Image 1 (cartoon, rainbow over the protein chains, first blue to last red):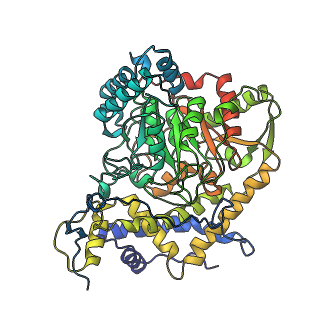
Image 2: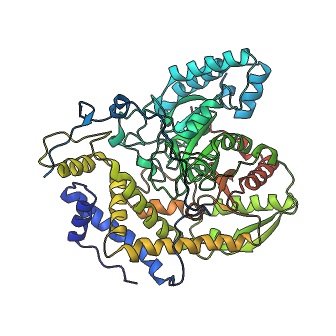
Length: 98
Length: 488
């Protein structure tokens, strides 16, 4: 297991980009400091031997849950679109993709 | 009049069934109480008096026609991360401000079918991320026992409303302690059921493997009554438990003979406020008087739960909150954007508060290439060890008892500067959430400043009935649950 590595400014900018968060300089500085403190604390887990331990995927003994594939009523488009910031002709409006 | 606001659900239902009062009179009395005290407490984000009185009139008409239902005509509140058709559901976030759900959460549908009257939506930490309700994007809720202190969180609005007489009962959600910790800090009963006991359909998703809804009430009987309605399999949530729900009301008895109650040394370690330890030890003595046997046990991975939780929950949150894109619903940043990516980033940068951004960042990091094994996978493995601690303990004991929170209600602003200090408020409630097992917080005394202390009883998976039985027997042997704050 890797030891917790120090979180660099570049790391924090990279994480913000992955998470689609436009952040200011002050926020990046604050989060770098706070995330580093939290990750430092969490580094204690690295001292535990979990080599033979399976990860918990589900706390309940449920296996793949299937249901019959039946058609049912859905929301009318007007209701489904009612909370969208901008719509046109039953579609969501976004800036062009580049 | 104000006595009505102090009623339990079952007292109100008895009065309604006897014809001593009407749902309209009861609902109006609680609405009046809200108007009188909510300027100080600020428990509600949205109040729906017209909806509530219409439901109350319908309940009275149904009763007059000879009908009854388990909650017919009793006014309750819902945490604002639970979808309610036609009523704003914000999750305490600017990014969902103005969002009006086109559907009801399954638990809301069930509560309405059972006849409940919905008073409104209560305040919470943004997206239920927090332990004090100070992370709400709108305002902070105050503790009815001392308005300079936090109500706990994230279901702080629901807990404060029940404590202050602003609802007979309320529903919250518990991802790492968000029902039990505010219940303890506000002196009310709070339940986290087994993961899968209640449908998550219509809860604003935070951490999908941990989120569960649960009741906040004035006594254990009410908690059993509300969970009975909320629980059960839902075809709309594939993680709900398919077996029938036992009769919780039938489990309530004062007989404690033969119980073996585990007392984990780790739950009385350094960091627990002396008044909290004293009150919880006294509660354990009451259990001995009831005929229970106390057994010293160990949950060796208790101290690892915080690290585990703050990797698993943010990882799941970072995935769940990816849906807030400024396109389909909610807030969209103003201005012209070069690309759709800019629209996402500026919307999310401005729409989410600091704690939510911090957790999205933490979760994104824990899941990112090169760190997945060291953080997320490692935490999921330690989660197995935490669950195994409980499995080993429950081979010898029926229930586990300890404090719900290491401290009583702290002062507003006291822990906001350091996220890790805030996270430590949940140290005794995280393990149960990670293990998926049920726990209840019941009032068990007060500290020297007159602030309530909560006793937490933890049961094995799906054994809520056993948990209710023990909590009821304890409650009936004491009078802590009858004390009410004088706020307002």
